[in-house]
Image 1: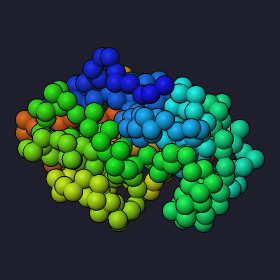
Image 2: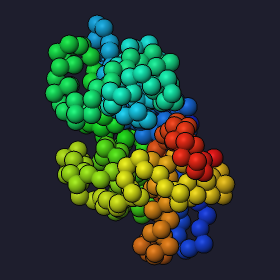
Image 3: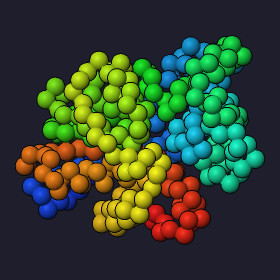
Image 4: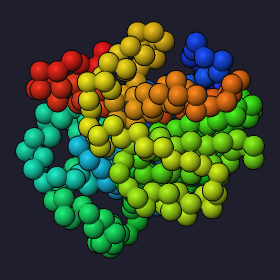
Amino acid sequence: MRLKLPTEPVPIQEISLSKNIKLFIKREDLIHPQISGNKYWKLFYNVNNYLGENPEKPYIITFGGAFSNHIAALSAVGHLAGIPTLGMIRGEELKDKWRDNPTLLFAKRNGMNLKFVTRDEYRHKEKLTEFLQQEFPDALIVPEGGTNTEAVEGVKMMLNEQTKDFDYLCTAVGTGGTIAGISKFCEENQNVIGFRVVDDSSLENKIFELTLMRNFNLIDSAFGGYGKINDENIRFINDFKEKYNIPLEPIYTGKMMQKLFELIEEDYFPENSRILCFHTGGLQGIEGANLLLEKQNRNLII
C-alpha cells in the first residue's frame, strides 16, 4: 500500500482576533488518524518512491526519541502497508520501560521493532546509518524527523490554491524539513516564519541546504528548551482548545501558537495582514506529556 493524496481538501479554520489581522490555521492534523500532519507529507515520497523501486524484502528503518511523532507515524505506515519497520530509539535506559511509554507502546503494537541505543551512539547517527545500510542493504533508512530531500518535496503538498493569498506562512520547526518545503514552494511575495522549538544554531544553514532559499525567518519559541513544558504553555493550550475547539500539543504547535499570539499583541505584523499557520499534528504526544505532568503534580493538557 502506498500513501495516497486525500480525497477532500484539508480544512482551513479562521481564528478570531481582536486585532485588525486575519489569522487562519490549516488542519493538517486531520489528514490521517495515525499518520498525522506534516509527517504524512514528509513520508509521502520517501515511502512511495521506495516501494516504486520494488525492493525484494521491503524494510524501513528510522530514528527517534521516546515521544517521537515521527516514530509513531512511521510505525503506522509500516502497519498499514504491511512493511516491517525498525525504530532506533535514543536512550538505552528505556529498554525495559517502553511499555510505560504511550508512543513506544503504540509503535510496538504497530509491529515496529525497537532497538534502544545509548545517547552517545545516537549522536553519531551517520555511523549508525552506515552500519544499518550494510546489514540491511534493501532497507529504506529515513533520518530523524523524516527530514531529507524527499520530505521537502512532500511538504509541497501542504501548499495549494487555498494558501496562495496569505501574506505570512507559519510553521513550527524541529529538524527543518517542513519549513524548507514551505519556503521552497511558496509564492514569491509570501513571508515564511519558522517557530523554532529547538536550540540548534546550525538549523538555518540546514534549512538553506534543503531549500536554497533565504525567504524565511526563524523565531525562538522553545520556552525553556525542546520538550520543556511550563505552566504558561499548558494554560495557553487549554484556553486555545476551549475557545477555538482546536487541540494543540505542547512540543510544536502549542509553542508556535503561543509565540505567534505574543507577536500579534506586540504588533509584529502590519494591520490587515493575512496569516496562515500549519497545524503539523503530533497530538499523540499529549498522552505522554500528561503522564510526566501528572508525576509532577501539575495541571494536565485537556
